[in-house]
Image (tube, rainbow over all chains, first blue to last red; front, side):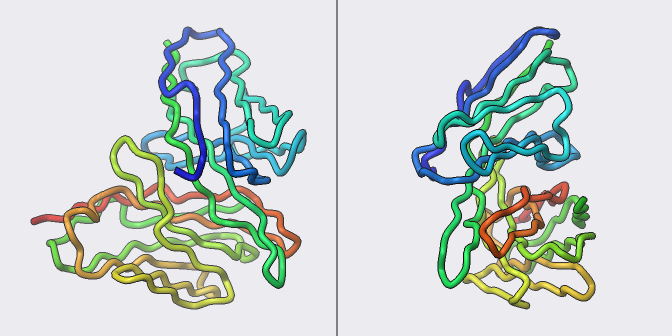
Amino acid sequence: DAGITQSPRHKVTETGTPVTLRCHQTENHRYMYWYRQDPGHGLRLIHYSYGVKDTDKGEVSDGYSVSRSKTEDFLLTLESATSSQTSVYFCAISAVYTIDTFYNSPLHFGNGTRLTVT
Amino acid sequence: GENVEQHPSTLSVQEGDSAVIKCTYSDSASNYFPWYKQELGKRPQLIIDIRSNVGEKKDQRIAVTLNKTAKHFSLHITETQPEDSAVYFCAASLMYSGGGADGLTFGKGTHLIIQP
């Protein structure tokens, strides 16, 4: 499974509480991504990281923050959870390879975290 | 930013027939186009991808075609089997020659149903 572990796998929390989701990789890949998946919307990018302490916003970043203090860990924090953040959250990783030129490997996804905000 | 449209949202085909899923993208700079398959309750898994310097790529029963001028790409599955039933997502992104990449922008998915 491409060495990606997401925790927790399931979480139920109350509106207004902070929540942190963890993505851990054992592949030493440079890039890590957080997506959310909702019916009718497909997968939407929240934030991504291109190295330790290097992060950037995606399409739906409002209400979320991220941190990457080590290559292997990428944390997603919901600062004050709302019901609209009920979703399945997927982490993905990608490497940078050098064959003639630099290029990125395909994204490989973790098994997801199902978050319910009541 | 990039916008990816995917059609149809649901596709039902008889086992053994072919299935075609189509996607269009808006950003002419995008140069990487993967397809993912997602079974119920599972993670998306890459099934095939194509880069903009190639017009077609095949892997056994699966093929992807890319028309850069029209900004559309398609997934073709031949001789469909029951295990092909799943949701399929197309995606597009820009991969930089220096080894960077924006995140993938996904279509909304196609639910492929293989009728026995």
